[in-house]
Image: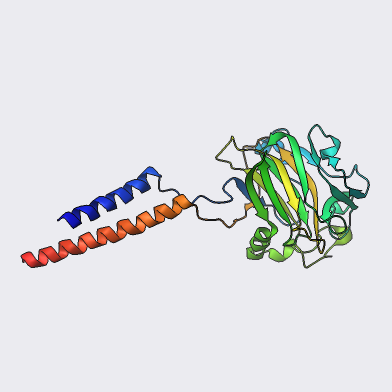
Length: 279
């Protein structure tokens, strides 16, 4: 009787824990960012081309066409205006098979053929959206989003590669989509990516993005049409599933579920045994 009481009490406590936590899904490492990819061939942000449809505010695009090709060791302003933001360093290249939206103008790059060090893009005001055309994507390309010194979320190009390879039209992402470089660099995908600060948390923002190429110069991090927005109401693109780590809270909850189930099963068996003895 005492054992039965303890087991029932423990099971009830475990179930209460689930109720108190709302029995929610696990805390995802990427919960702070909702990441999407546009259809193959899209090279500009939908929030830039049609801001009203997405409730986008203070949308700004940097296409790098105002900069001369070369390496900027001392950085450069975002869209030519340091009052908006600055890049700590980076290279600018003329459109080629690896980058340059619409097959013209210029694009941003780090690593090959320039320095392998990461580039930090710092904004003077908090943002809730960032998008860019990530061309000639490879597994070394990485991003980390910060609010001041606090990491909001990190992202790897491998997540994009996994997403693209799951698509029925995966091959349409591979190779340069522009007519003057059509089909070149077929082994690498080209995709416009959107990074939305959590739609369910309007207070979440970021003001710093670190772009890196895994400290390697064997490949490059090529991108164009960097776009920001201080706010939005609707998202665009297809969601990319990002791997997550199970939080300690969720681990406790899962243990509680297992313990509760085991306890209730034992209690049920005890009741059945008691009923048989009474017959």
